[in-house]
Image 1 (cartoon, helix red, strand yellow):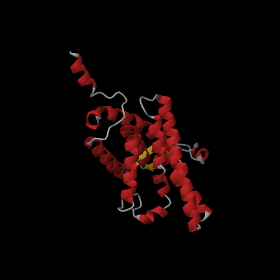
Image 2 (spheres, one colour; image 1 turned 90 degrees about the horizontal axis):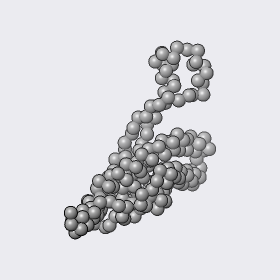
Image 3 (cartoon, helix red, strand yellow; image 1 turned 120 degrees about the vertical axis):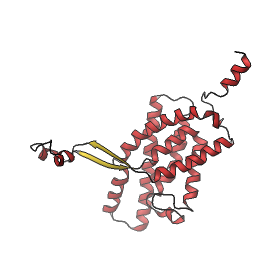
Length: 225
């Protein structure tokens, strides 16, 4: 194989290079916006065993009974929006990942593509802070994920990135709740429902999403280079 042919073949391989602005890249960014919208309205039913607070009262009962056994099974409706956001930053990098999120936010302020609708009034929804928090989370993740990060870096991005979204989301929610004079009971209930066990699921699926995004990036490198 001549050096010229070898050089041409190597130009189609992904070696950690930054993505350039091309028509293919812009199309991929648009598809990422669509992917976020789809994830927003997608629910995944997750079932796993767990120990409720009243577990001891059930130990004396027949564990083969369906109703008793079902008491130890946790059923959760999970929305994979946050893992998809980190999948996008692993796929597109920091610059185009932020472009996709900014496009999603701007579109949502005009069209009902957020979970509870859309429009300018959505700025005063409790959950809008989570959406805004995607931006600093992507900036952080895109910075750490440059090149070929090891497992510890991916794990750090998954944990810290998810926490950034939830912490900023909660702070924004508290700000809106203060404006609305919401009760402490409502605030506590809302935080538990939005940032309770959801955080654990987000970290686990974000870890998977980042690795998946890195692999898809290699496959689509020819389109984006």
